[in-house]
Image (tube, rainbow, N blue to C red; front, side, top):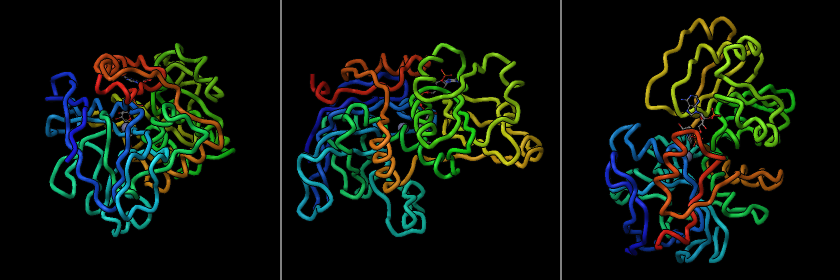
Amino acid sequence: MTRVTAYAAPSEAAPLEKTTIERRELGPHDVRIDIAFAGICHSDIHTVRGDWGPQSYPLAPGHEIAGTVAEVGSEVTKHAVGDRVGVGCLVNSCGECRNCLRGDEQFCSNGAVFTYGSPDRDGTVTQGGYSEQVVVTESFVVRIPDALPLDAAAPLLCAGITTYSPLRHWNVGPDSRVAVVGLGGLGHMGVQIAHALGAEVTVLSQTLSKKDDGLRLGADNYYATSDRETFRTLRSSFDVILNTVSAPVDLRAYLSLLDVGGSMVCVGAPAEPLPVNVSSLIGGRRSLAGSNIGGIAETQEMLDFCAEHGIAAEIEVIPASQINEAYERVLASDVRYRFVIDGSTFAD
Ligand code: NAP
Ligand code: ZN
């Protein structure tokens, strides 16, 4: 075991604090990564605060990891010391079930191992990327293209793949009219990726305060959802609505914005269930769907796509000592557009 410095929540009600966590000894297929940057995803906050159910504490979150390979196990072939690499939300899966074989490791029938707060194969509970180092089996480590800076690439490991995967699955392309609801970490990636796929992109944000940013990121249109007129103006306007909101939304109002045959895909995952009136679906052969991150091969595809199109996250780099303040700003929708922790500050 190696002990490394990390920031972890001691309980669901307490702020994160500096501590140490254990990383396993390097197995033959393991890669040890020096973490250069770790993004702060709203899921980190939901998880440590118990929104999605009880956790085991202390818990170090973080599943947007970018760094360099420090050491490789004896049988590693995919990565070498010094390589620029990333780890997202997944660190293992069975590799044999139908979902894994299709490349959807996130839906592993035998239980995917998530990067933190997840029972690992050795019986321990995984600890995430708010730490100096992580040890991950080589097949769950992806390559970060040279064109992407490590700090702005880190958020792609969750926010990037979580928006790329559904946009591809629902066949977004040059003829698509796409609305992205919520211009936060996920939303600002969704806008850039949908634009790069050729779609006409509309941002639906609570206010117009980030309109200039939204248009600069590639949106064609920008509306405030606090203005009820927006829902009248945009009725039946979209083929795909990507909902990235971390809080409950009025599904009926958003479903009315879908054209016949359109799909509303929820990736935002609030703690509370959302009621839906099925007549909103029946009345336009509409679909209401969800999507969960993406598989490992698709994550590599997304990174290569972002490098090719010059896309990355817009970030605010913070020292680890400011994680708790950053959480409060994320909860207040005051993030432009992802906080990224500087990995060199964990031990300060
Ligand atoms: P974020 O940066 O906080 O962005 C969420 C955005 O939603 C905010 O910036 C805000 O945008 C909007 N919003 C927040 N509260 C709202 C409210 N009460 N009413 C209406 N709009 C509100 O969070 P994130 O990291 O992008 O994550 C978003 C959600 O996706 C979280 O629930 C997270 O857990 C989930 N998630 C899911 C997956 C998955 O695989 N399905 C992966 C990662 C994250 P405006 O200011 O523009 O309105
Ligand atoms: Zn995430």
